[in-house]
Image 1 (cartoon, rainbow, N blue to C red):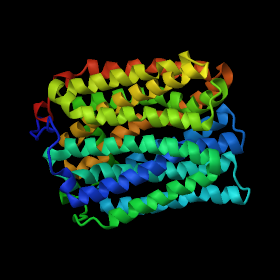
Image 2 (image 1 turned 180 degrees about the vertical axis):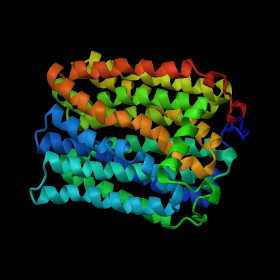
Image 3 (image 1 turned 120 degrees about the horizontal axis):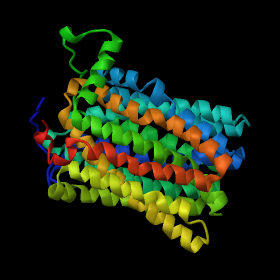
Length: 424
């Protein structure tokens, strides 16, 4: 069914940063993302440096962090559509701070193990899923629809600036303070985010639920699934994201281990590579309005995912010497994140614009359930392949899966979509 909504602006409109509540949300998210990027390095490095983890161990830890996508995402979407979204974000941030702070505590009392990291990783992943769904669904309440493109672009730009700062800072903190202690910075960042959320004045209303649609839990969950897969545009984005996420998760699970043991790079160097490469995400966010203005939303999605699919290829093809591998890996991350961010912003605008607010949590959860359910499988497969074939060949297998993500886009009407108002 056609829906008429206002498309994202071709150029950023002035005024989005004069929105006090969006500014608070943006600030808290940025600080939290910096901390989370430190954890992205510190969490696996705890296993590598403190526990002498194998590739299979890393696969298990990453699989545990991703497992909530299978067991909880659909229920989390229903929860977000039933509860006050800002309050949900605040509570989950406090929970994440407690979980992350437990790692250095266990390190202090000599209680760290692969099993404990798996359990904590699972809890962190679960809380993050609920937070992300609530954040995505709360944004249309904070800003007008005609500024959703600008708001998402600002957030994605901050995410990638955070990746730049967090990856570099994470590498330094791990190198000088040890990985468990570095995680305390992430715990503090979640507390800052919770504080900024508590200062937002926009009414934190429960999503409206009509009496006529108050059915059982599974019936409400199915509403989100039916909407997502019944819409040709959302279906194409969902299937494409699922394929891409599988391949990139194999790549990311083994990148640090591959860089440290095969390419003989230090933790600080790997952090530097990820930090500078993350500037590609900033460039993608900055380029998004002009690219969409010239190509439209649909073709911009295709361009973004094409660049992201080609970007990681240099990592398994280039090993040593360091003066070749370091710039090659940096460019690889830059291109990958440029494409991912360009594609992600466009997909978010399409989803937020085409989905009724009262089911936005469930519809987003349906998409993320499909796209993220493959991540634990990819992590486990990466670990097995890494030990059986070596990290170089395992990474290459993951990278070669990425171009398959183009197929759902090419065989859909998405390429004809200039703005959400063109949806049929």
